[in-house]
Length: 434
Image (tube, rainbow, N blue to C red; front, side):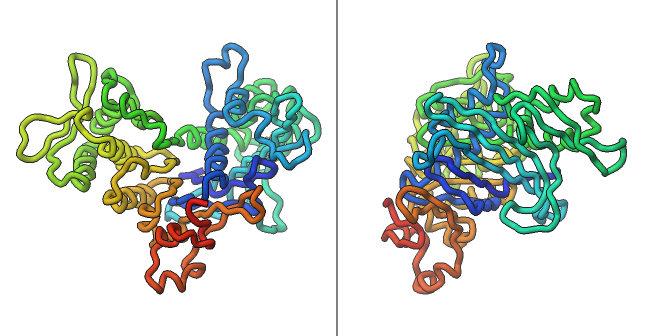
């Protein structure tokens, strides 16, 4: 795969979120909807997949990354309360390729699995897992998808894996697999399973794609404005030498990330300074600087003032904007950036600046933001096709619809902005905040 992108997500029997048909994603995705409408549940599905594929220290004590991830995901509580227990929760992720001309290719890699959930036994295990290539799940096609593997399909612990008939040829056949664990995704454990196989890893179609998918998913980064620890950001002085290039969820490695990105890209310092000038026009220079012998801190210089300012002298909103600028202006962007309510704690006059940062970053990577801010939404009126509204038709289950110019054409012609419609509770976009 070349430059994969998360194209859509499908769920069934998962909490209150019914994503059938699939929710198709773009490079830029703005989630809106009332509290409890499923936005956080959607993001939890993405976090769950990343957590399942990242090794954790507890694996040495017999706790798999899947078991750790499922506990964070909700354990037995992931099952829709309206579904009779026990049951299977289905989730499918589609990863499309972007070719060298920048066009989205139709053929996709789809990771499709079912979790057997039993509320009485307080557990969830993998009951089926498939990785296949083909067209959208929702499209009808006479062409059968190509299966990289099928695990637990007919019997738990057993499955089949596609293997080339001979090196250099495209034709494949299925080879049986045994002793497949139900507490770890096959995408992660395939190399171990192949140790007992006659087929060398490089003779299996899954060999390359699993590596690329895991690398892609492992770079996803999740941020929630409520979890940004402003006190740590201001007071912690990270040690020089760390390799961090992504801001942590709390933001406490800010100065280290700034320093590392400056070292990796000569233009980054100019980029971050220009970003800060957009909120403070008299900004002269902002930089990470050594504090003592082995630590880093952030200095901020303004025109006409010789002494540096430090983050403990800056407002909460200023520190938050610096964090978003560092994330969104990075020359080494994550493969997916998810930001929950980036508008929190920011002055309304900075909303057009923040919106522009988000739009620009989305030209280089994939971004999902959730927001309840009409002031921020106003500045996505020109990107209605990128706005996804979480809504309910029966007050118990929620679905997602994409907005469009055609849907709001009359009101747009009357001069309404997207945030205006949200403020007055327009039913077309879910209303605000109910």
